[in-house]
Image (cartoon, rainbow, N blue to C red; front, top):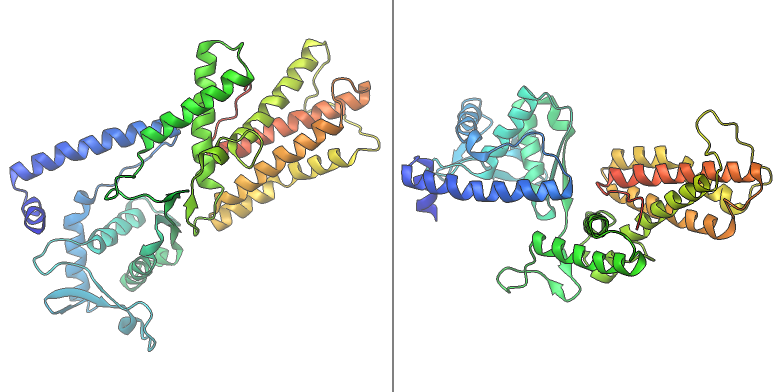
Length: 368
């Protein structure tokens, strides 16, 4: 493998051609996967594009005395350069002895591209938790290089994904591929749609099943702390009654149904200009209204801490408060003034549920 990488590094035609072909296979699959998840990628950075700039950076670090050659390897003795007496960041090799690049070579060059060409204010590296020390080393070397933006670089670690029966492993033969999981999720969701809404068209059933299945996968990843191992359980992820995306999506669909019923019965829906008065509001109404009002602060808190978990928990609690409200407070059957106020509350809930789910990359269906 070392010899093969060296051949690629020397740009031997046969090796480069094979690499280009197999890399394209991966890129094509990734584009399809991201499209299915609704995740747009604005810019792709290729390691191969920063190989040479990385070598230039290494040479520059050597010339500036930030790096030195130790046992044939260019390294940065970070603690020494920062004047730290206690071992903290240790020593990081930044190029192999044969001149081929390491991850560090390319990560330093990639950071320079982000800072110089894209002028990023903050750079978040979403990578496995076991790489925490490595990224602390990279950020400190960037600081030694003179990049002020290094202070705004952050490693956002994530833990492993496992199954209830144990850890996935390609060697053990129990690794799970996204396309298989997505197909299974959509199939399970389709069965639930058939049971709850059998009169829908086949096309509508297929689309709703897709939205529910993909939503369940996304929520199952995002409603956990990124520093904790995720144990993915199908029954929990696709629950219409528990802490899961289908439960929240169903709340949105129910809100839509209430509004549609009100319109069908000839009642005008409130808009932004409607004057609303709610006399002696019930506890469930006030709890729901307060939860809606908390949304902006929760969005800010999630952004400041880089924790989508906050939005996931918020939108679940909103759906739960809406369920309590729906069970305790008649809407369409209420007296005119109360009905108008409650319809406004239902519409505000519908919009906030949709907005919160959208922040998680999850669609909010109107029918389920």
